[in-house]
Length: 594
Image (cartoon, rainbow, N blue to C red; front, side, top):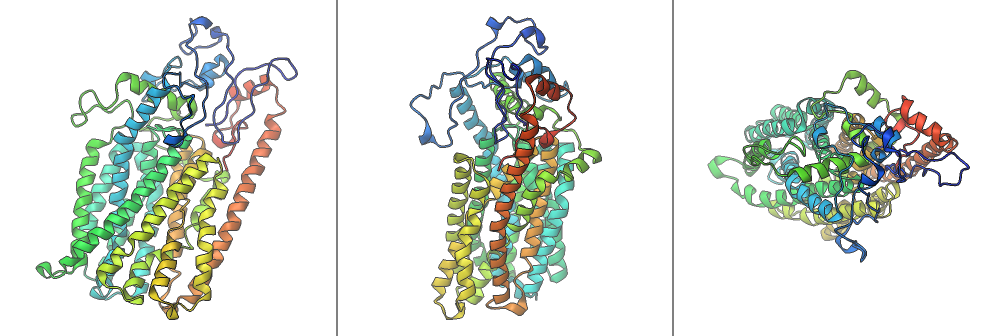
């Protein structure tokens, strides 16, 4: 939501001026009393003395050990917003068909204790299942790496170039499905579309048991990509109905939970390696290879999760009642009111669109041509390329290059996944603690740089296999900036409409980067991949420069806006808020995060 200023005195008068927009784009109107007769949102007949007091802002706590001694769970947590100023409140009144309008109340107040208990409840009810669904996605899209260790390529008479093509087809299909999936999700509602996706792709994943050659392999990879594409931005859209910046969480709340969301992917990778260790031992059962049983059983597991998702995904915070979730739902009236008002007070734009409202072609085009989001899209294209080819070939390298057996190769993928999980969560937290997104996100490239230099300067054929394994493990344990950049993209979108499309666009660029990654290691460059490793090193250096340029771009854009906004008087600012045709991140009172 853009920073919106409340009514205040003209420049030069003795009372303090309205605050300038902060660099993080948050909403910070003034808290001084207003004339309630000017408002038409439930306080027109109230006297100033009858309006409940607002809470005092406290330093946000990202960790349990950050709780200050002054923390009072009984203190009012409701913060100042545009709805507390009669002049701005009417301009941000929620539309009458908004699905949560019956819980909207600008006079609602709640305590810090209530808010924190409710956030924990949302985490258990909503976030945990979102993570489980993501783990199911990861099982079905990444288990091909485990299949490689069980003679998958030889059984189907495939080459490594065929494997690269399969990865490219999957990611191209995944990319092409991103935007259509988001449009369907916004039309049907993510609570309906996501379970449908899961059931459909689990059927295809299960059918991989009957793969017979190159054609069936490529066909299944394409179908999986089409059906899984859009799942991640669909889930992020769904979470936005419960968290600030995604309708349930605040800005920092969302970023940290996205960190846990992608941690679930790492947990799935660990679980996948452990499952593969057991399932691949089934080679010979009923005369079938172990990798066939791997695809079959993990596909059936996803099918079960998909079926349960129909019952465990409510449409929104005010619509949790059902035969499965109970006739009273998960949240009582008080909790629903807190969820709705804490979210909309931080970001009034969340009431601009109904959660079942489709996106029109015009809105789609407006979102796609938003040039201010393209720097983040470009980062999404390139930031994982220096590490992805090595990750895709890890199990094959362990099995055929370093001489480990099938089961050792799968278990040896676990350490890097654990390191990767810890470092990813670590930088996600650091980005919020220091309010620095760009430089913290760039740390992943800096981490990978010395290991890529090593692979380019040492003859790996003459090095002990455990040394190569250690270098590769540390390289792949890099701090992944993906959670930071997804949240960053959402913040800089600034409207529900553009967030829906920009989330898909960002992920499309990430998948495009995956297509590039899948074609860097080629058969004619094996086994040392000298040419490919030089390319990875060059891309890593380029990415470090790119992050710096992105930061400079957003600093420049914020200064452009500030030059126009800062010269306005209070009356001019209020007139701008009332009459401007600028929307989303094009508003002068919005500041890009970087």
